[in-house]
Image 1 (cartoon, helix red, strand yellow):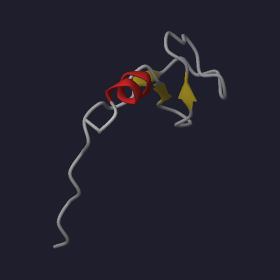
Image 2 (tube, rainbow, N blue to C red; image 1 turned 90 degrees about the vertical axis):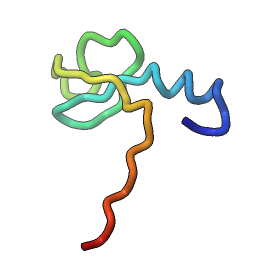
Image 3 (cartoon, one colour; image 1 turned 135 degrees about the horizontal axis):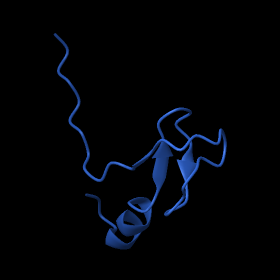
Length: 53
């Protein structure tokens, strides 16, 4: 991932709300901002940018 493995480990614990895109703590059952229960883990791999066509 990046240059700092300790920071990468902390970032990977974050959960993202699918509804409002806010960051939540690890192990959260509901979004802290909107109350939605639809959460996903933060992506661990960097995605490549699409080439301009």
